[in-house]
Image (cartoon, rainbow over the protein chains, first blue to last red):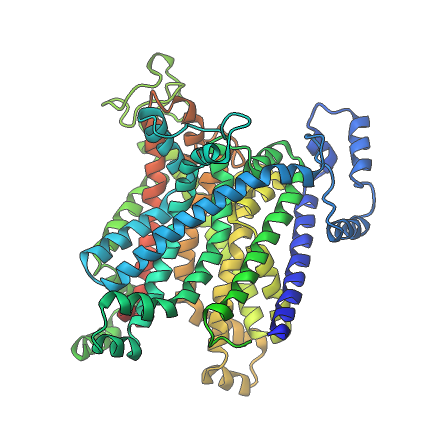
Length: 313
Length: 294
């Protein structure tokens, strides 16, 4: 077990090293002078030269790369060009909202996806199954921003049930704030439930064909007991894997949806950084988000052993 | 079961594989419907300039935000531009981007995947690179690349091609790992075939079906991500109508003119949904093993 964990952590370090290299490459494939691109067409030559020096862009490329690796390893992400604060600070300020939104959306996608997937596997081939399949296919085809706008139109503008946008007045309590996240969480959660539904259904179908499930049924156990206690327990690990895989989709959905609902989260920060070419912020966000994704999936891999005692490392 | 198998074997001698595949796919009504929807979208995209009722940039301020009517089927936008026309031009862009992304990611991903699966020395490195690329959410990697690349159609294709190449590489590698253990590969190697020959002549033809299925799903995903890029303002310049930027600019008029959001949104959903259905149908038709399970 310890051996396996160490090996996985080593693998993670390698992946993060490559991630760092990719992030470096992305901000260095800019045609021409990045400093000039960042400051826009109105900048003076002196400003451009100053920024170039500040970002270390006048050093040779390999040296810049080493420098970048060194500061990432020391968790230094540099300063934003437009926000007059460090990238770490900007990300920390925005992170709570995005974490709340992602967790709510993940909860919704799981609560929607797992029971519906189980149901559709149990009722395989029935009308219910067909409706579920149609729903999951459609949900996977819906752009989250479009769902978001449609939800605003009905739930906020026409029926006044939930707030239109934003994150509540300053000083609002957590519960008040969460009300502002209900519609965004639906917009992010519903498309992501599609994958969970389909995976749950397939893994349940695999398990339901097993002999031990037939035995449990033959013993005269209640059908619900067979499904929940016997079949689902074995489908759990696979369902967990797919929930881990949707993390990327959830964060991606949050990035787009924060813009729709004018939520001051990490997504909003990234999008405005992209539009203003604030490269330190873009780099920082790329590193942190991919790091979170890699960590979550490592955690899930380690959870297997807890959920399924047959898994040996 | 035995009887239908026999029929399939007999047909195999007379019909081409593509024709057989199509026959198997059209057994499902949703697949037929999806193919129909896609044909309409493709027709609109190809014949756009000839069938669109107006020019995409033609403004008619007297009729701005007009609801759907006989002269404007999908209504008009805040500049009085015809929404149907702009949806048709949006289809041109979405399909072009989607198709090019499929081509780019299939070519790059197949090369990477086959080499990783067949040449053991390179496997570890290449797969860690795809792992790293897949650690970014699609849209995040795409907007970050757009920040560095520019705003032309080819920049969008490069960005999305980079995003989807690892997915193809995974599929191609997985299939290669299975195939390389089979005897016909061993036979080719025993006869002295070079690595390149084994990969091109023996492995590649056997990868066509999984890659075809993957390509269809990437087509759908690329259209969704392109729409999100345009919506965020990080796609092609707003002068070109795209489904995504039409929705973005309609946001402020949403309450007066729901059709401004509805029309391009439905275009995205119907196209993506049809592609996913066709991908599903393709997979089932190509892999008879799966049909029993699902």
